[in-house]
Image 1 (tube, rainbow, N blue to C red):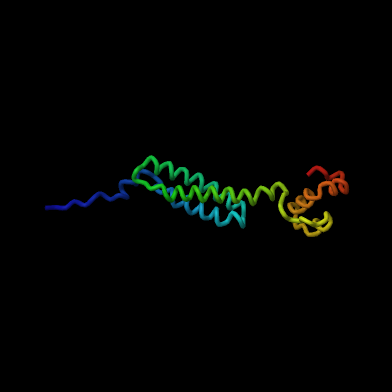
Image 2: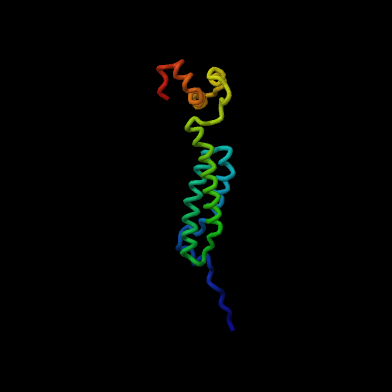
Length: 140
């Protein structure tokens, strides 16, 4: 009696291209959540990538009963959290609504500003005084 060995599973999947989308989605999601509160842009970019890769992985797992989509769904969820959290950090800084210079006068705020972004935040927070003192620079 001869026993036949089952065919190698990996050779069966070779024609499918990139097999696993869950692990990259999960890694990107963890990076997004871990960096979103410190470096908002990294959280936004990694979160967006995790959402896209996680969606593709979850969709493929939904249509293929041999695949598990748990890691892809976790990556998608973490990526979404990192994306939203990163946007919550980045958007106020872009709009000049950050907390830099709160409670200071325009002169104190401008003296402590390091760079144009913080100077714009000072001007936004003290807009009336800024426009009165610098009428030609009111266009920001």
